[in-house]
Length: 353
Image 1 (cartoon, rainbow, N blue to C red):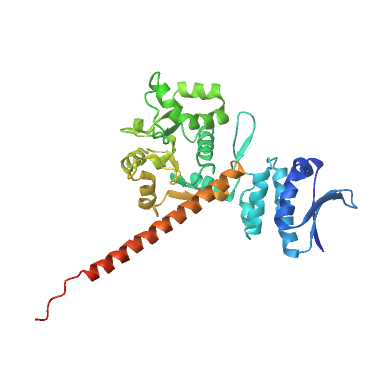
Image 2 (image 1 turned 30 degrees about the horizontal axis):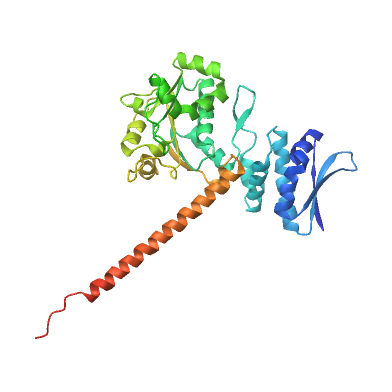
């Protein structure tokens, strides 16, 4: 029997690590096949004891617990999803990556909630935005592409690095024909831009957001409104960029002015363009690779920070798409071979006479 001890500085940290009804440690016990419990050491300190038959499993579980203790000290919310992410990272031999996260708060919401990168992929994305003028963030739903970009924009505005925030996205319906919407122009485009409003409301509060819009400090508009403009001293975010045509993407990227930063976000697996229409985001990824001051960051399903089922759904769809592509590839090969055999049987052979 092997065991490791992790010291705890306060009862509050202990409660956060264990979770409601010990839900967090139950995940660790199931993942590594160990036992996790707390006791009071001879010195009078609270400690967490990890024990089990396998030395490797105990060491990995102890590493996961130690990182959760660090998260609790940072006053971070620890839920099922964050525990699973820590366990998966440790078990894959990448526990060192967790040290990259640290206590790096991007900004604080109106309710006092700190906004931080919750995964290594998100941390790398935030760093890419800090270091580059243009960043393309590509990945599945729930990875924080837009939310973190808005957080970085609000941070830049608060620190007076830029004088305004511009948020835009193409006005394309997600598989539904909504028809003519009532109201003035703003009312017609609001449904398309609602996800951007939601992020800004959380960061700034509805009243503050409205004041900044009235002063022209924040602008939320459809992509079509960007044509012909030069955007200086701005933090610009293009959301749902997979629905841009190549022409729209080129138009947007060439709007960039002096002392400005642009973040382009999108999910290439959720394109709502008409069948056969090429995505401008997919084309931009190919064209802009290896250009200085432009970063292309790809998220994976491990970066999903929504409900844990979202990650499973993404993996299921990826598996389905892979099997479908392989099936079509086999069918194409079979048709090609059949055609070659047919052509060989009916090929013209000159007479020897």
